[in-house]
Length: 207
Image (cartoon, rainbow, N blue to C red; front, side, top):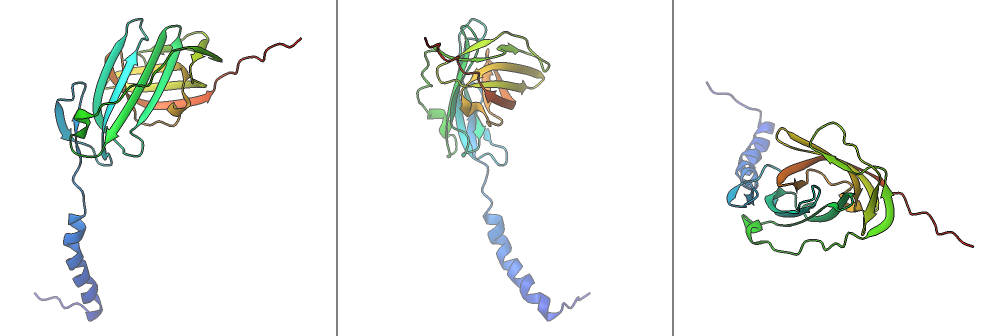
């Protein structure tokens, strides 16, 4: 059977046929990145992720120091970051990330993690705590350190494992989405972070 199309439809169809190979060819293949805590696995990143990332974390939340390097995929416009968290006296987390945009390039990324002194700066937050749960954690008032001027509330997940965290944090944590962080050797994805301003120190009394 022969179907005759009106002349007016033939030119648009011809143009579409000529452009179709070009449209297909313009789709970039997914970037391949080192992934996992050892960085030994190389695999395709999910759609929309266009950068290879390395995240360095250091945690003393349980009185023992954990240092971890984690390899993953991310978005090039938000994959480099550095922040610190304090949930109590001697209980801290600091994280720093760097990224690149070529296949497997995060294997050899190297940079210095954010330096900290954990010196109290006079700001405080009403609650400092961490718990491996999806409910709530309890804790007392926490003193902020260094450049921390925000009170943060964060939740995260790693498979069936959940965590909730409250404490002081640097303001660049606010607005971070889907950031990977390692706590006590377990890599979590931060699902939600909310921030309010930390409470300012009381002004010095004058005579």
